[in-house]
Length: 198
Image 1 (cartoon, helix red, strand yellow):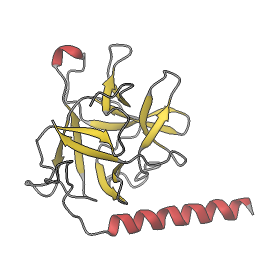
Image 2 (cartoon, helix red, strand yellow):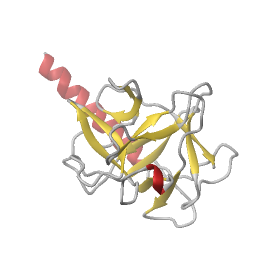
Image 3 (spheres, helix red, strand yellow):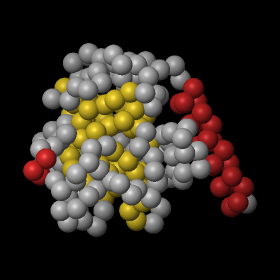
């Protein structure tokens, strides 16, 4: 019975991913209702007010940097989006790269701070920036609409169909370091965001 339940859960998860992936792409809009553009700096903020935006932490002064939620109401660190398709706008359900923008003096990372996934604790993958040796080599991000609340992010790529938990929506995972990390596994609830031009 338990095995059947697991199989059914996996089937419906795949079905949901298929439905999301099959949706017609549409422009992603920022908080002012304008189209999100490649190469422009944006803050990634919670869709609901009262919480901080996404930032980076570097606890050991090493790479990678971990993508976490600000503990205060600060907007966090800006990011830019780059698209594999449209050069004029960012579309939902399409392959994107996300790159954090920080002053070079604030990090020892000597490469671009492009986001990717890293297995951090058993069964949980964290979003990181500037990782050269990610255990799960997925750096392609999708943005999808999330009801009327905003947008959700996921690491999703046809380049790595065997990677675990690919296309699961990202949420916040409170780790032992006291930060809420942008992360994904099968149990983390999707966390809706909005994009504000920096």
